[in-house]
Image (cartoon, rainbow, N blue to C red; front, side):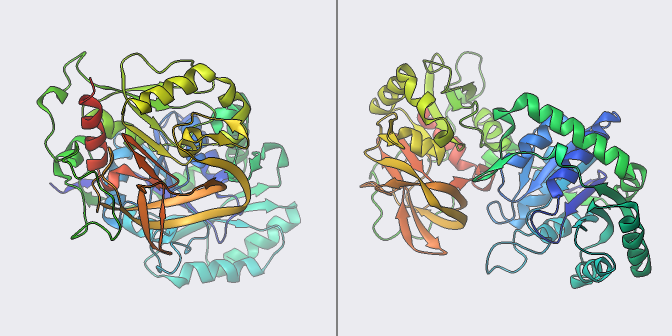
Length: 487
């Protein structure tokens, strides 16, 4: 059923990466939240780290809107799901306004997300090395795509009062409203490392202080009333809000006409044939426990994954591999997502009781879904430190950044997917694992390059590929069924 959904909303974009989108978006979220508004935080693209700061600023889950991984048709429904009942939604863009998936035009760009949401765009401009030229820059971004509505500019890294006057005069000539001016403020800079900002979970106290400082900076430099007025100009969206329960009902698994060449399936009818077991209806005490790794070493996750697992009938319990020496009681399924295990290899290795518990669970055939950091944790070693030893593979840090969208087909039947299931995902790491694939690979990449990757053995599915389960909810259903079968 298509309904009319309306919430005031803004998309915070920039001409390029490094202009200050995260600073402005997070500061706006926090400043409006301090006014007593319920603010829904969103991030265009696959990034896991910025949404952690958004959640800290708003008290609500940071949610991603990725038109490549989930498809353009899901952007508005996922937005409506996250923003339901809120007074304002703020969407932080990705890269430059018109930058998207390589070679795919506007696909997965901030501009595309803004158009799909019918949302006005605020352009954050790093003005540190320009004056009157800012008008030409902004004019170009405003006129490049007439369907993108640029509602105003926030000037970042302005050096002085005189500099501000020159910038304002230039933009006034161009007819573009200036909605904020932020001076250089290194004291609120957020620390970064090889994959971007340091996640909130690793510096919670300092992150709280940073978000508070960003809110103060935005309050002082931005016209919050004008920004709210602009947000209210967004027209209603005609869409049905995404629902995990409804998504599970309608999902069936997208497969190719036949398994990809070289697929090594189990040959059996593994869990996930589309029938939800009768005992997964939510009866207290009868839900299979699915343990999800968290803590500072495993911070990468999408909120919809937990929601889908819960809707599929699981009881989701979080554990911290840095601190907990045992899996949660009754664990029937194990999800180990992305993060920074390379930063905590000694501590993860030192937790021998948990490593042994994970290895025993996997050896007994327990369903395990591991992405990126989870893949490294399941290997024999990481930078020479012993890990769980589930996989006969060793990982190490590398100078090379592996980054980009991928199109993939499942090559082996697993607890996550049947062989032949097609998904889009994202790779983002500075580590390598050798070998890169097992006897039964997890995925065959079909774009941008062709190669096999990952491991499927017994109940384990381990890969570098990050996926968004809202794109294929049958993944969550199949995994929950596999866990239920072990109770």
